[in-house]
Image (tube, rainbow, N blue to C red; front, top):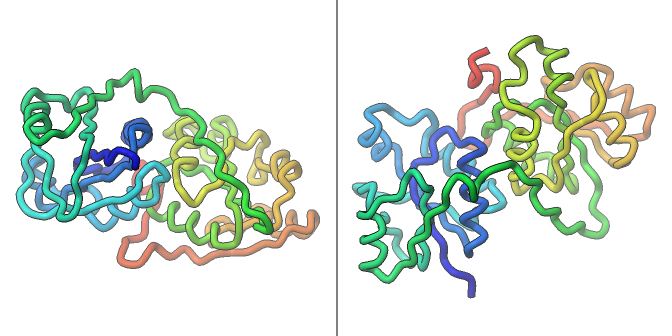
Length: 272
């Protein structure tokens, strides 16, 4: 049986360094996130969380490195593990900046291994390991910038992946700047690829090498997908005609957030 590894925190405004931390923690065993509720975050920071518990829960559950997420209840002490009925961790992992003697003493008193991951261990943005191909599955392609990955993107990936193995082409930095202007993208291509590739619905994420709105053309011709999926905003730039020429099925999905979650926009989150 793998070790029962846990981390705990608010995970508000989840970014690539947080995901890298979770990835490295998952290498130690089966990873459970004990997620702090909204009132606990408000009490600790003095302000409401940027994203609700429901949205944070949805995002964390979508990460391929996380086995499960438990939204804990009751008061939260930053130097203690919150209680999760029916769950007994064997390893508590903290980031280097979160280490404290009080946390270490808490773990030791309960027979829990205490592991600290420093920044060096979590540096860089490696490619996630390829997921095994399933026989008979169609190849599905989606493309975009994904400059600030949010729950709307994840919901789109989740829906697109129901049609087959999902491949995501991300615009390269130079092309995004050419299309959207100076200051874009806010997040560099390797980091964007890493975040998208960390979503469990995505089989493979890559940086597109072409230009314009059909910048993934070289990769699409090599991949030969069965289906090109876009949302309503992305149904432009000659994509429909392009798919007709190549014999690729073209499907437009409505832009609907996951049940109970708000609509999200990268433009709004980035402040552009």
